[in-house]
Image 1 (cartoon, rainbow, N blue to C red):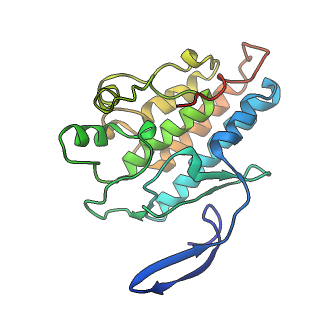
Image 2 (cartoon, rainbow, N blue to C red; image 1 turned 90 degrees about the vertical axis):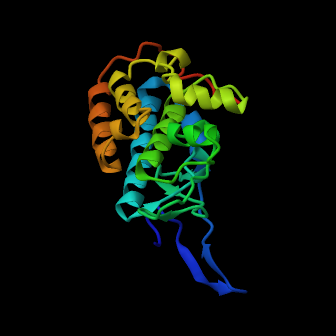
Image 3 (spheres, rainbow, N blue to C red; image 1 turned 30 degrees about the vertical axis):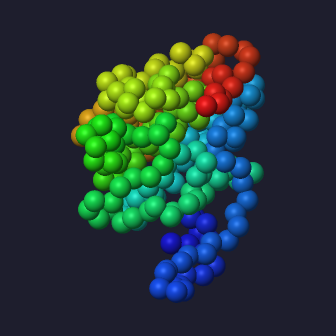
Length: 236
């Protein structure tokens, strides 16, 4: 793949028995920083720009999944946002083709799906990578970008974090001072379902639902005339 939501390719080959892929340098800032900038804007501008960023990220992953690729490392630092708002997904070092069996996920634990938490609790390591597991990671990433907080008040103790992912519902947007997005919040809650079968059938379905939710929420009055959405990002 070359261009679009993928960084342009320079070279693909093999050396010393190992394959390699060289992509071009790509301008942009990570999605975490880009979302933080938008949350600090006045609500009249920042809110819609933040929601648009979320849509572009979901659309990027929908495109990747449509091509039969699983990224394997879903978190905000692996999404670059250019000055015009376009997004590029980077770091395909853990990517695989959809349908390959037994390929474990990588990524950051704050965006880990319950299936992997259950596998780790049982001593099996991470669960196999699937479109549904990536959808959970994508939902957790959008939650972070829209609210400035994480889905849970995560413990840094591994066993307790796994329990939270398996048993505790995601915190409401309002717990991060993010208001007036009930439809979008409902869509993300479905993407964050504990059981993979309760999530959207395809990432394109998540994209369609997100777009419809944005249309529903965007006309609502922003409650707080101060910073647009959420607190400043939490640092862990």
